[in-house]
Structure formats: structure tokens, C-alpha cells
Length: 306
Image 1: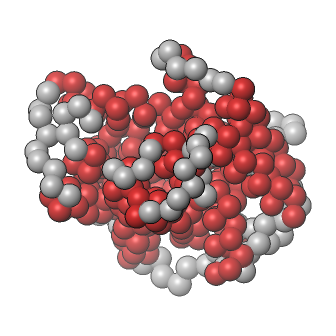
Image 2: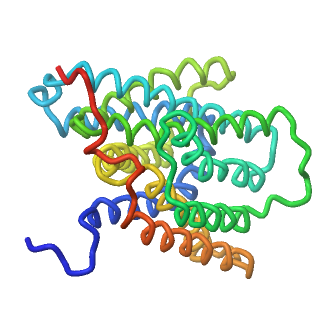
Image 3: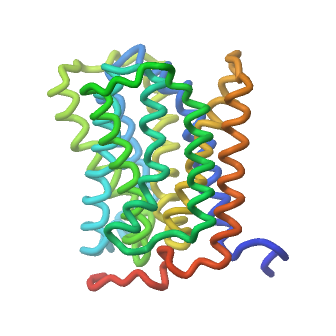
């Protein structure tokens, strides 16, 4: 199919990442419903275990049997990071408000380019920094954390979760090229499920109530998770980590719009924040046209793909 005039060569990958943020935004209502019947870490474990089973069934034994050492290593390490994101954020939420958690988690937006600059020596272009600043400001306005700026244990746990979320995005940009995205996603979901179960026990959570509503919620979340982990591994083979981060910043916009549909209010600050996030994406899109120092699959090398 000929490339559409004016569109980036990676527009399909970017469109998939935008769709991921729509799914993320819609999960809040499902999660809120599912938590009536189980603890949060139990839900995470069940969600990722079901996603792993689903991915295995879709791949079949032949493709699954082709798992390489590079895919296994990348999947285990990124899976541990994903498990840390969910575990730390969940534990932090038991001690701070959801709005403050959303604000602190938003720090992953500036953290991604900082990690790239500090540890991989791949700083974004100056215009991309303005995009990052706009998107971060928009997420702050959407979170509206209030006047409580005192930092406690819950804040520290959530900040650590934000750093882990940034690390996940960077590592996917570094390691996903050369991987089969389905096998990589399967390893990631298996790792999160295996780590989540003992974490739930350590957190003192009991077995879930096997209500039909809980089963339906877990099934829906598993379908979303299987697709999201596959799509992230696929799309970030060509979309830079910084640009992917700004696309991921759309998540609270969709969550807010879905909340409006469900009856919540979306005030002036929230609309302004949404506009700033979109401005950040536009600035990043302009900047990436002349990028020479970002992560790109052509500059990512792997020593072992066997």
C-alpha cells in the first residue's frame, strides 16, 4: 500500500500507541468494579496470568517454542520492571490519595528523556523538551493533586513506580528490536503473574470471590493486557522512547473523557491540561522529523539473538 502523503513512516505504530492509551483510560472503570471482589495485587496477578494463557493459545506451541535467549532475557527484565510499577503504585495508593498518586506517577514523562540522556547519552532535541514540559504540565492539571505537598512513604513508593514506568519505556525502546513481540509480551505477562501472586500473599490479600462479575472483569482486562503488551513491544521497535512517552501521556485525557461519559465532571483545568498534552505531542512530532540522537531501531544493537 503506498504511503499516505504527509504521514510519518511510523504512523501505524503511533496510531497503535494512541489506541493503547484509549484502552488504559477505559480500564479504570473495569478495575474499580473488579476490586469489589478481590485485592489489587491479586487482581494484577490474575489479569496477567490470564493474558499469558491467552497469548500462549494465540501463538501455539510452534511459535512459542521459538523463544530466543534474547527474548527471554528482555522479557524477564522488562517483566520485573512492569511488576515493580504495579506493586509500588498499588502499595503507594494505600497511603496517599488517587489524585496525588496520578500527579506523582506523571513524573515518568520527564523521567524518560532524563534516563536516556544520563545513562544512554541520547538526549532529545530542544523542541522535544518543550513538548515534554507541555505534556507534564498537562498531566499535573489533570491530576490536580491539591495543596498537600508533604512527602511520606506512600509518595516515595509512587515516585519509585514512576521511575520504573519510565525505565520500562526506555528498555522496550532499547530491547524490543529483534524480538518477536508476541513472545516478548508472553514472557512479560508470565513474569508479572508469577511475581504478583507472592506479592499479594505478602500484602495479606486473600483469595478473590469468584463472582461472575469478577470473572468477566478479569477476562476483559486480560484481553486488553495481552494486546497492550504485544502492541507496545511491536510499536516501540520503531517509535522513539521520548515520542512514545508523550503518546502515553494521553491516557488521563481518555480516562477523563470516559469519566465524563460515565457522569463525572471535566472542569476548565482538565480541558487546559488535555490541550497541553496535545501541544506536547505536536511539538514532539515536529522535533522528531529532525532527530539524530533519539533511540531508533537502526542504532540499537544486540549481541545475541539465538
